[in-house]
Length: 111
Length: 117
Image (cartoon, rainbow over all chains, first blue to last red; front, side, top):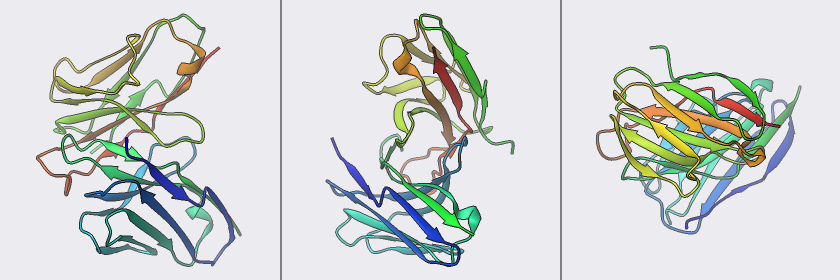
């Protein structure tokens, strides 16, 4: 089956720094989604991408759907302590809309 | 809009016991999903319903697992004869599915933690 490789697995950064994380897949995707999960909570959708090359922002977050349709990145600018959590990329299947998640990037921010 | 609600939030059970989780989706959402998440991993798809019909089940859903959505509203996920390997967070999600993914945002509940001892 398809595989989603997410990197880095974890990041420890200073407050105010910019962050970049990415996902690659073994097959072509029709969607790329980015979710954030806080400890003990369910994932929350941050950004959804539906077209190759699409670049979308949500506040300090920016994500892009790679031209090859096999990768995506998420950037967070000027990180703050509440950015702490696990960030997941995911693909949303066309039929049924089920999600396949990557392994996650754990972000830790030092005040 | 109260969001996706799951109950109980935490459950500790002895191996071999049965457990049941309940999910109340966002009202008017026709699609309901169950996912399982173990520590350090992303959520994995288990099964989904469109209204009351269970349309797909993952190979992860062994015979000891059963899910229902009798009236197309709330859903239950039952695990029979629990094993230690069932320890995980069980996430419910819902969406209003009308075809292609764009616009069909999937909303997750807060999850139900299961610990089998």
